[in-house]
Image (cartoon, rainbow, N blue to C red; front, side, top):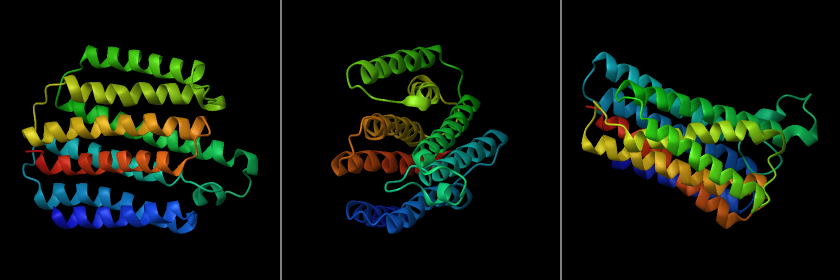
Length: 241
């Protein structure tokens, strides 16, 4: 475990340094590497460190790892600078639309990741209506505050962003209220902490993307919370016993 943490932290710090220096091509490469490391951590944990191979564990691990892979794909779209190199590969996209396309692609990728996370949790717990209520209430409050008080401008991405938020906070609510039938206490705590950090990271990201708060300090907080969330979720699978 220590080796994976060291590699992950080093890669993340190099990525953050290039982000600070606005060397966005190098930042993109190390962002991809850092994301690949949290996926690799989960794969290693399941196939080398993990124990137990009943059907629920296999299904859960497959969904969980696929969710991390979708997170990696989302990371390749939500980048600083003049748009993602992935989007720019498609020459027919108008320059003015590149950031909107990036944000839409990132939102869809992470939404799919949360659907997979939620599906995995529902394999080992029952649907909690308190989680649904939490998702609706928190989404309503955050978007009302964002639009009417913070003057955030979502534009074409308002409806996709609301849908994404409902999924994100339902994931957190299910992690909070669901009684899991698999995993150790470490697994339960890591899933909860990972989901909570993910929610916090997106709350910080929103004014960056939609409020023009393009400060490096905010970016650093967002990225630290996000990558902490992903590595904790990746390590949780090591304790899926």
